[in-house]
Image 1 (cartoon, rainbow, N blue to C red):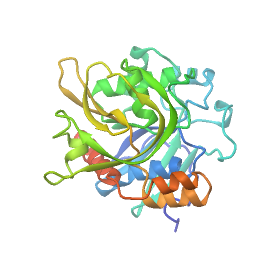
Image 2: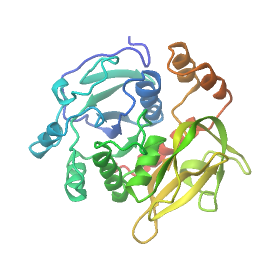
Image 3: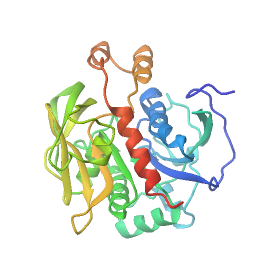
Length: 317
């Protein structure tokens, strides 16, 4: 029996898993075992209460642009070591792994991403891949310090969010989604780390992602660690939440008529479960100061449960 979140079993490449939902995940923290792969598991965990899940991982920050051309010939292309010349060797490369979560085996497998800025071509790829949700993790990179791969990654987020497929951008993912929709991102002089109240705007008071778990007049808390900030609102979005240190903390994307879509960006880290924080500190991935700032409870688990419910409600049965 595999230990939850630790044991891996490499499998041959498979095209799909019958009877499961398919989550596309921009895996931008592969070099951080707990906040990277461990955080991915926390995102997926609440979905497992109702269904099996297949997770398709994208690593554009380490993938060559040339390898993206493979998707012109085949939609679902397994990622190979030669496709990721910028791989951080501190974290071993694997193509395909099964992790046991909630007494279920979850298939995590890496695929090639088209490295294009063309919305029409990206939309075609997404449609043919047949995904049920998109999640973008946090990253050690910064939108304010632009890298070429961020263009295609932002195009993917914009296309999926506007298509009506449930989408969640976390921290860097929030910033990248907002940037792809026209926001300005600025870097602060210092890092902000800690737990702050997420204050709802009038658009956020009944938001299904942020409030469905709340009792009347309850407060929402998020865990934050970031230096980049979204400083202008993205086009065609509602501002749904703010924090003391960060004004555009949560947004929801609208369609062309102004109707809300199941697509959000949130600056906080809902995947930062207590056990992940403690293990990251033990392994030296966060400082004593950061660890101290993360003491206290936050609503991340409930937010992820709400997102899982939204995904399931939007998935054809």
